[in-house]
Image (cartoon, rainbow, N blue to C red):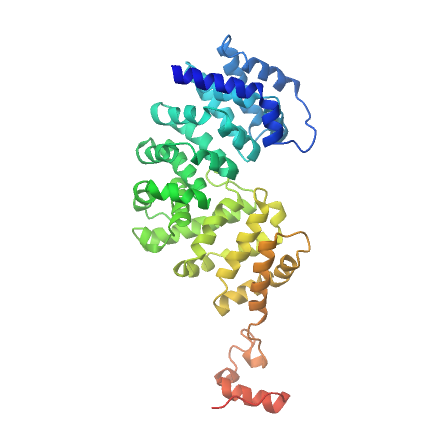
Length: 429
């Protein structure tokens, strides 16, 4: 009780200084169009001690207004943040009534969804992580509490850094990922997957052996379906980020093939704005583990066969429209193309997909492309433009497929060229 009272006092002090914190941590870039109903409900939320039922209803109202399905979702989230609701929602996590705690979790997870500023603020409120972890490991609200952490980790690097400073957070996620009910287990593994995208989180995750104890058992239990379920897919992506994913991680080659195909399929859906089994993956969140898969030579053939080269080219074509982490997504797409360009046939697939003019655009930074992507694009386009070109029509890969000129070895072909076009002498036998 004494610790809870201390955390509550800290949250209230944070709330009183909220405007200053907000200006420092999350400055607004343009004016907010105020919804008076939201303002009224936030006032009700602030009176939770005296009127817990009205505060609970207010939290539910804020959840609905922040939900991605609402037409003014982004604007509503900004208003809810700017008018100081987040510390009071965090305080509601400690309410005696379950419904109040549930509505607080729902509102916080929705406020964090695809909102970097809200994600950082939620984990920065004094005591908020203590309250979330308490719900996650010792209540019937594991799924709801884990979802708050998962959404905060998915959309804010600074939030992840703050979360990792909290003792016991990774251990708590592992507990839920290994022993909770299926829905909560899936959310916890999703949170681990989000954390695994940050290099500074790798050490903590490896130290807790989340790969061996939480992720690999999920992969080992996969069935023989052509498409992985959501939990197995996120476990596979986390393994790819942390230690590298190979065929040996699965009980059968069919499971491995299903994992690769499902991941590429989800990227295609993300680029088209579609969710997958109710999960709204961003292009960045799925392309990141695909890049790590491509880094291992043994995975490349399967990735190319599933069409990853063409999708990476599509990302380069419309990288500004991918939303979350657009510049980083472009860099991942260029890197994937570079990793998958070792075979001549794969290089031709890139040319056929129109990659060369796109790479020139990225390299020239014609539309303010990031420097790291531009440098890598320059290296790749040089490789692609140095590819062999058919000189005889009979050497054309399609038109000359049946030509006897294809029987000539390199030396004979060089002799013909030397006599016909002049220039360098033919290579010696």
